[in-house]
Image (cartoon, rainbow, N blue to C red; front, side, top):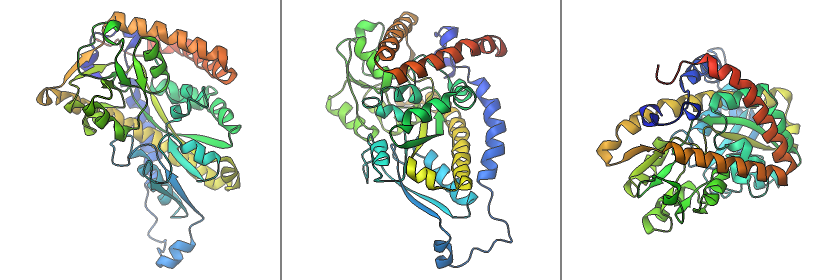
Length: 378
């Protein structure tokens, strides 16, 4: 988040520079392949021939409106890449939130076979699958490239897929963004006392932390937040990245926008596929879906990092004040976070296992992270 984080302790800062290296190489390699057009020798054929060539035609409900920048446009990229790579044989048609499935119920519909697949943030499953929140986003947890390292190379993918296997779902990491904002507030936040009694929209484990800090937390889909703010049903909100939040108009109601995104240092999205439908696919079709999603991860992260600076730079013209949470507030939220994580782990075996894996990886990764990157103020 650049200069807006000048007051954040180094241990809590986002080392976004390291992200660029990964994105430049992987997105260039995979993303270009995903969008390579058919060769000139390939006949497009008639409309009926094209239709008969389709092997898979699935409806794909999504959690975020496709008009939302970064969050909503990534499944568009993934589905278009999949069509191009398969020459139209794999066709996943996007359906907006609530059109055929409520935004928070996508995995339920996938599990029950109402749809073959859906694109969603798994943190929405926290009420029925507590450990899902660790896959979606963890307060004071892994930053984007840490999460991908854990997911792809340190056992995260196996743990995530095992978690959803018993629910009849196969999950594929398909999108990833950097830190969200810490929220939009009508009044300044100088201490935790300013949070106590506040009616706020908050999601995932961060919501549990805010409840412990004294806030009254509610969950709303993105499309309902502005109206709730405007009518006073909530006093404050978090939702996503600055470019998304501004598009939803939060700045018109709440002029204090806080950083860093302690509650979601990285936010992942997944393609959730009905297990029977997944197992019925050929290995080549499975590989195409995994490749399109991997391209989606790198392209999604690239766009999330590329588009925030200009939004924040324009805040003064909109009367928005970008603020950094005081260090003592962050440290207290971190303390509460660890209490919440330990409490959840004590109640759920899957949560305990995944949390232990993440903590062990972060402890090992810290040897590299503390030495490899330039100091924040260098």
